[in-house]
Image (cartoon, rainbow, N blue to C red):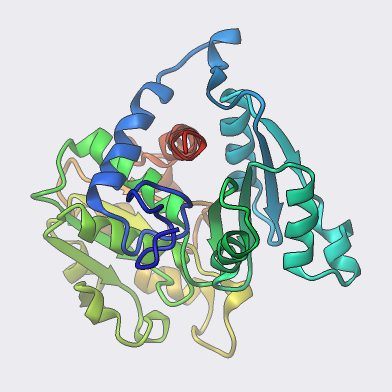
Length: 321
C-alpha cells in the first residue's frame, strides 16, 4: 500500500478504489477508456469474459441499494468471477460480530475482492487498512458508497457518460442540483470533474442543503435555479435523501419542487444540447419533472448501462494486480 495514497500500491497502480479524492487523472481516464469495449452491446455467451475466472467477489452491502448491488453483481459475473452476496440483515454482523471480524472470516474463505457499501463514512478505508496490516494485500476493496463520504464508481460512470455524449471535458459547464449536503455522489462528481479539467462546476441548492465550506472545492454556489442553469452543458440532479436528514431542512418535497425541481421550462435555460443525468433512484415530481426524465435530453437509463461497464473496468483493473 502507498503511504501517501492508500488506494495505490507502491508502483502507483490501483490497489483499491476508495475515493476519487487524490486519484490521479491518468487512472481516472484509464478506467473510462477500459470501460469502452465493455459498454458495447453483446448477446449470449459473448457477454462473458474470462478476466476474473477463479476469483471470488464478496458483495458486502450493509446499506440497501438494489441498483448498485445488481450492477456490481452483473459486472463481476460478466468477468467470470464467482459472486457471493451477503445478506447482512441475517449475517453474523447482525448478531454482534464486528465488521473486521466479518472481514477476517471472509478472508479465510479465500476472498479476492470486497465490494463494500456502508452507512458509516470510512468503513471501506478501515477494511483496506486492516487487510494491509493482516497480510491481506492480495485482496482488493471497492467502495460502493460510504456514509456522506464517497461513491467513486458512481462518479466514474458519470464521467464516462459525460465523455460519451460531450467527447471532451475542457469546455464544459456542469450544474449539480439538489441535496448536496447529504450526497456522497455530489462529492465524488465534483472531485472527478475537477480532476478532468472541467472549467466551471455549479452547485444549485437551498442554503440548508449545502455543506459548510463547499466553495473550497472550487465550485460556484447558486441558490437560484435560473442563474445556475443558464448556458450549462450538463445538468446533474440529485434526490432528496430524507433518510439522512435530521431536523426540518425543507418545508416539504412539494415546496422543494416548486423552487428547485427540474422542469422543461427551467431546462430550456441550459444549452439546447444539454444532457440531464441522475444517479437514481429518481423521485418524479420532487427533484425532476416526468417530462424531463422521459425527454430526449435525459441520459438516465444509459447511465445505468454504462455503470456495468465502468464497474467491469474497475474490477478487471484491480484483478490484474
